[in-house]
Image (cartoon, rainbow, N blue to C red; front, side, top):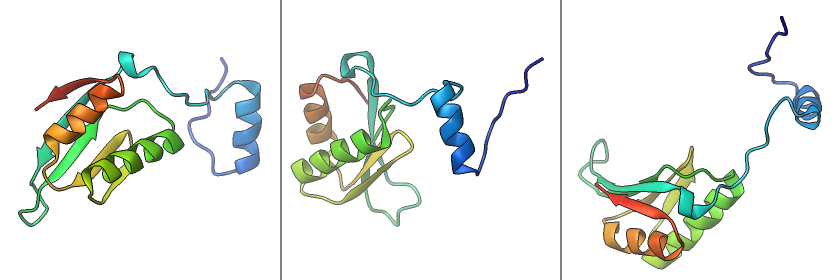
Length: 109
């Protein structure tokens, strides 16, 4: 039985495994096949609203580029990571409209 490596801190070993195809490199999925959930979150934020768009299947670079364009569109700050984008403030309609324009399926909730 072949053992399966779960995690390694050695960058050389990770590079070797990627080249062998043991670790699949994450790739961007087609926007039309992704369903993005856009919600307003007020919990643990001292009463301030944050718009969260989650469910992205993108690489880290693509996710940060998309976050930058959404932040610019809303005129607000925010962050991206772990398949979700957070935008400071209540921008539910604007974020949902922009994502739909880019071809994503959007669920507001």
